[in-house]
Image 1 (cartoon, rainbow, N blue to C red):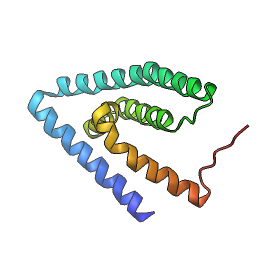
Image 2: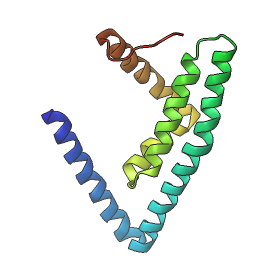
Image 3: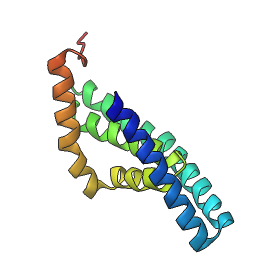
Length: 129
């Protein structure tokens, strides 16, 4: 728990330092406008791209196929949109990486590994009807 707490403190300080540096270079108003713009874009992406991704998952399940890769893309797209919606430039950078198809492929193995680990511990359960 200490590592998580320390991680949040380090992240918050890094985000704050980056906001100050960017604010000094491009101006406070421009920095605030950039933060608001990326938040609006993130909300738009979560709403539109997220709904399209959920529809793809439903279509895949309706065809009787396993939704694994489509579901992972949906989760990564949604996560990227949420990170864009959060204020801050570090979250924006990670969000953009999750939304770009080329770089999203780097995150897929990490997500699969995390999911398998959770399933082995019994913390992630797939229910079939």
